[in-house]
Each structure stands twice: as C-alpha cells, then as structure tokens.
Length: 259
Image (cartoon, rainbow, N blue to C red; front, side, top):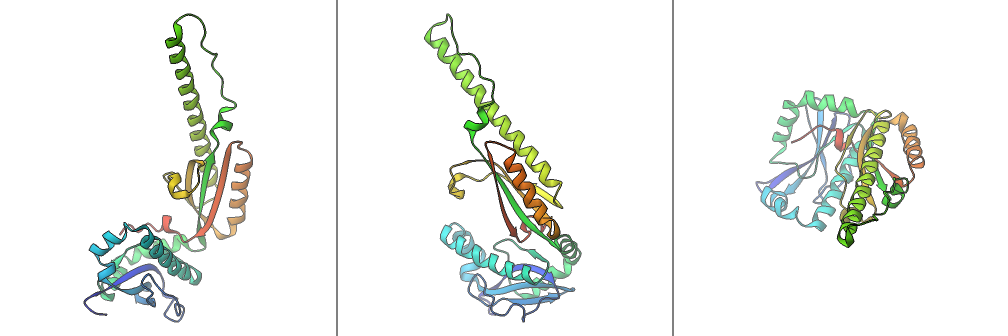
C-alpha cells in the first residue's frame, strides 16, 4: 500500500476464513481481497485507490448510478463469497479505512459487538417480502355511497361526488394498510426478527404496481421452507394483493453495524 491507497471493508467474520478461501475473489476495484485478523475475528478487505474511493471522490461517484450499480454488485459478490464460507457481518457500501492497522483497531474495539452479531446471524439468512395491491380489487367490497341526487344544483352534486370519491380512496388505503400490518405480523411469527422498510418508488422497481408493503426478515435455515409456504398462503388468501419473496440475502438489515 502507498499513501494514495485506502482499505475498502466488505465484512467481518470468524477467524475460520483466510486468504486461501478468498483466492480468486475480486473487489470493487478489481483488486484481490484479503483477510485482516485480530481479536479472533477477520475483516475481509481490499486495497483501493483514494483517487476514486476516497471521501471526496466517493461523494461524487455515488451520484453516478452506473458507477454505483457496478460497485454495489462487486461489493455484494465479495460478501456473498464470505457468506458461503461462514457467518458474516456484512458492511454497507463505501466503508473505507486508511490502512490495515485501522481495521485491526476496529476489530479490537468492537469485538464483543461483532461476536454478538455473528452469533445472531449464524445459521440464518435474510429474506425480503414485498406486497403489491390492485386498488380496483380492494375497492370492490367497499360500501358504495348513494349517488348524489336532489336539490342543490350541479355544483353541489359535483362536491358530493368528489367527497364520495375521496372517501372510497381513503377506504382502499385503509384496507391496504390493514393488509400490510397483518402480513408483517404473520411473518414475524415465523422469523427470528423482521423490519418494515419504506416502500420503493416504482421508478426504482421498474413495476407500475402499487407497493403497499416492504419487509425484511431474518429466518432460521431450517425454517426457510415454512417461511416461503407462509408467504404463498398469505398471497392466496388476499384477493387484490400479490406477495413477492426474494432471497436469501446476506443479513445486511440485521448486522446492527451503523459505522
């Protein structure tokens, strides 16, 4: 390493992983990744140029969606390789240190936190569940208000129609929120933990459907089939609501590592 280099951190695992297990794995800069060990833990890192991955260049590059997508895929590929070797605390994109000694200091200072997180994710994986709703189907069972009639003129009739339309829309939204809450509650009963996430903009998902729920769950490996079956059952029993299961993913949502 030189003064122009930094250390990109991918994840933290037990000391059972070493350079031999990481042979052939490349990182975000095409660099070979390596193991940095301390305190009975291993951080998987790669040497990167600060001219591209330093603080100021990163702020600029993260606004480039093509660069971001390529870098995220490379980062996730390293984390996935780690997960295949054993329990892993994945670090989020763009965690950069100046040198290996700073990484060792991180392992020393936060060893108990990392060890507790590794115990939590051992034998478990992260799964995502999204729900999409068809507003027309959800509105079919709504109580229709009578059409506005009688005196009052066209202006009054228009206002009454608008009030009825708004009331119907609010009813559909309440139904969607109720479905989302019930889905989350049911899935939590078959998972070690779960979190509701902000629903994703259709521009990002590429889907025009109305997303009403976005959740992520930490599931025991031996219960994955039961979890998938529950998602299918929840999908079948809710007309107008379609569920989507994705995974398994590295447990980013349950790593509990904010730095």
